[in-house]
Length: 224
Image 1 (cartoon, one colour):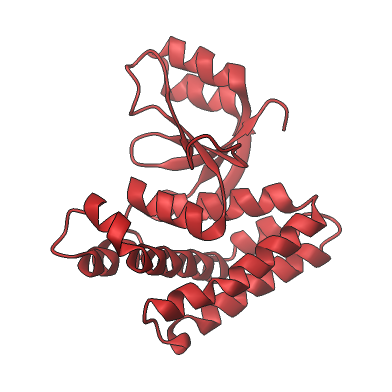
Image 2 (image 1 turned 120 degrees about the horizontal axis):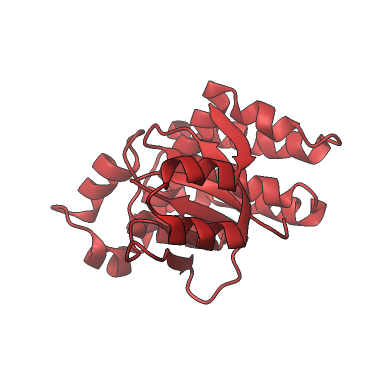
């Protein structure tokens, strides 16, 4: 599955040899990067692993997030999903959270995410939750979707595995889970500086991601 963690400077020096200002900027803020598999599901996988990793040393926060995930089934039911279509995925998701709660060594999360079936099941559930949240808040999100309808967009672009994530999907999932995200984007800058986006705007992010060439990796600030 990838998910290896490496010194950020080593990673970007090889890839960005003609972008020294970007290398200087990102290395001044972040020390490590965790590479995420580039399979079209990288945003969902990065958000899920990165957020859970940030909760491992905070039992109360992890328990609250587990409750949020359990309650998220109501979002799917409200959007018209049949419980049988997501129950197994939700049970697996909650099971991972419970294993993380019981893990004193802190290595269960990485082992679980390196299991293809487990990791993909969690990603698929997050895709369904994103779709449900978009549809349940259609009055707002429909204005930002280029498709015959929001339903068509969700079916084709959100619920289908290996489809790249758009900004509207990121916003929806952030709101659905209550997760604040900071994205440092190589693509959105002027070639000399990174573009920075915090979702929701003005929040204190609990997760930092690097966006480059339609791909997301996890960033770790120096203070991490």
